[in-house]
Length: 383
Ligand code: NAD
Ligand code: DAU
Image (cartoon, rainbow, N blue to C red; front, side):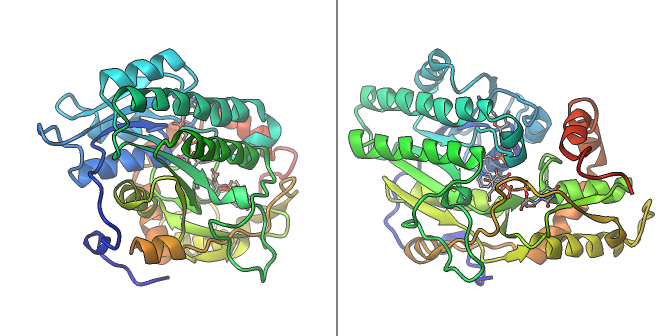
């Protein structure tokens, strides 16, 4: 990984005034909530007259959880949670006007690839129609405010829009063609094209980011890393799709959010930016690292060593073999670099799941069990 630099060294481009009044969509989700917490930690929203505020708009689907925001939602703090749908145009118009919003930081999405395969409709509705609703409302708002140069529509997209890479292919840059393979990736690609069109046609000051796989605290247990940690603690099998040789690039969620803040200030309107680390590994190798980390905790486990729990199961249809991002633009034009090594990030994440057992245990009832049974029941059996 590239050596860390402090945020203060992110100064290669001219700074524009940082938008201070933010509408954060999907801010009760995994990454959106980490972004809001980071804004608070950095004093970007503090309640002072000069400081900004965050309005979180979140529909609280199965993936949304208010508990991710408890540290920033007490009465004295300038973050508010509005429960509502990004497809609700009247609500979005109202929030933009009432809170004099300067930037939308758009995380809200249906985000899980496996769910997009079993039920794509909500992905089209939220990811495509929802993004269109926000764009159109924000354009009208930006016009009504006199088209201020520092307003931004920051669209949080994914590396999955570039599709699958061959093992020896060069990493994808912002100029690589789109080739989405899952309904999730296709819906994100569709939303990216709408954002681009609003920039080119109307001059709306947009930014698009393509980030690698995130991990860290408060990630919903349907995703690979929390699912593996939790299954180890419960003595359940660790399902590896196919041969486990698919490669992913991993970034700590706090690094992702730090890059988004840098881009709000320094990103060139109309441009897109890859956000990654070069920390690329196969799923099997990663799960083996997770098993070894867990074994070293010296805690009682239902089954140990954890590698015994690994079970190869039927592959995900259309499973992308490899993602890898070329982040030259972000690293060189903006001078931003990730700060959290994969080794440290994974250790800290495991510690977090061990010390926040009540958070993830509450998610394992009801809906999650039904999902787990449908997703894995026919693929694998308990060890
Ligand atoms: P998540 O599933 O944890 O959170 C999504 C949030 O959006 C939830 O709080 C949910 O309630 C909310 N939401 C869903 N539909 C909504 C709607 N119609 N209106 C309002 N809110 C709605 O997802 P995440 O992992 O935090 O991902 C956030 C964004 O980052 C997504 O756009 C995703 O495509 C992108 N992304 C994720 C990763 C990753 O590794 N998780 C990597 C790159 C990009
Ligand atoms: O690359 C960015 C994307 O990363 C984001 O855009 C998505 O929102 C996010 O969900 C994530 O998508 P992935 O499909 O890569 O993440 P997931 O955690 O579902 O799976 C990571 C890899 O692990 C993938 O190759 C599938 C594999 N996998 C996953 C699960 C849940 C398994 O082998 N077994 C599993 O049980």
